[in-house]
Length: 214
Ligand code: DX5
Ligand code: ZN
Image 1 (spheres, rainbow, N blue to C red):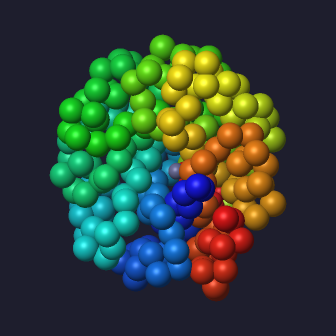
Image 2: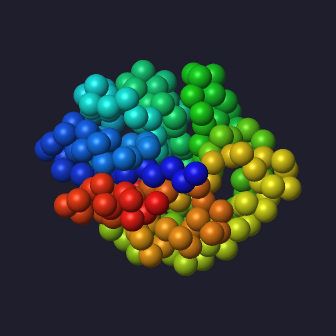
């Protein structure tokens, strides 16, 4: 079954709690939370206090995507603020294996993300350790960008590697440029968790928008 995770990066920040509730009512499975530090990516969003503030708005899983340098320094704060799962960027971690175990020791599923120019093969040493792999389908930093077609090849490579290692249960997530046209392509290539910002929050009818992605 496909998991749909609307990204609140495209929501109205002035009404964040209500936007999260609207996504919940519209049938979202997870709420995707894009944390950006203005260093790892050229944009700055929010951190633990905002996550804590919207936590009471829903019981849905908070899927926290850390686009920050040195995430190992603040992972515990994100967990305490209400993250249900945490994904870090391979490019941001000097000791990726250690950081993955830091997340797992907090009792949360651990994800690893790679940028469009990072090869899938670089993840091979940690595939036995992660619960989710996020293949970025745009360069992280902003919502509303176009899907990078080469991502489909990376998804197929990843699925093959996971199958070969007996790790086919690992979630494969995509993030960036996912809409009703690209959703069938990424699913066919092996993705089972679809993040969508604009394709959900820029639509007046969020329920129809989520149904269209499914
Ligand atoms: C990109 C973010 C995405 C973004 C997706 O840096 O990680 O989650 O919000 O937005 P859309 O779906 O509009 O491309
Ligand atoms: Zn994201």
